[in-house]
Structures are given as C-alpha cells and as structure tokens.
Image: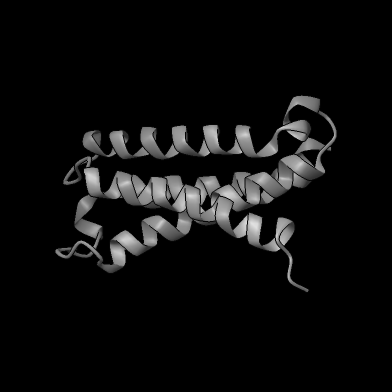
Length: 124
C-alpha cells in the first residue's frame, strides 16, 4: 500500500531529476534572481514535499512515516533537493548554484506551508 499512496511522489521525483540534470545547452538562460528558473525550482519542490506528506500520511505500511509524515518528508525533500543541486556540477554546461539551492529549499518549506493551510488550518 505504500506505493499506492506515493506513486505520484515517485513520478514527480523522476520528473524533477530529469529536469535538473538536463544538459545546460537545452536550458534557457536565467539572469535574474527571481527569474522563471528560480520560480520553477521553488514550484517543483513545493509540489514534491506536498505530495510526499500526503502520501506518507495515507499509507499504513510504515508506521514511522505515518506517525511523523512531516518530519520525514522534510528530511527527504531537503536531502533530495541538495543532492540534485550538487549533482548539477557533473552535468555538461551546468553548475551548482547557491540561489537555486535556496529556492529548492524554499519550495520544500512552501510545500509544507500549503499542507498546513489545506489540512491543518482549514477555514472552510
């Protein structure tokens, strides 16, 4: 049942992997601090974290993940974001960027904030 509730998370992680490790010549130039590239980094990791928290909450195969879905989702998402950003340094025409890493980590936190807004602080 773990895979059933986390399939979207795994698929989204593969999408992120393919986008972040794409060779640099296929990527558009990003000059500004708040360019489309930075907002994309924020968005993809926001979605990843949100999906992971929901998936860990709903699954019942691993009790630790079910009891503390936020803790494990944040740890995994932060680690994944960091490793992928560092991994860009081995891709041709790409490099690791502190601003990208900051937006990756910001996306992780933003995904958690959206989870809180929808599931914990529901105004409906």
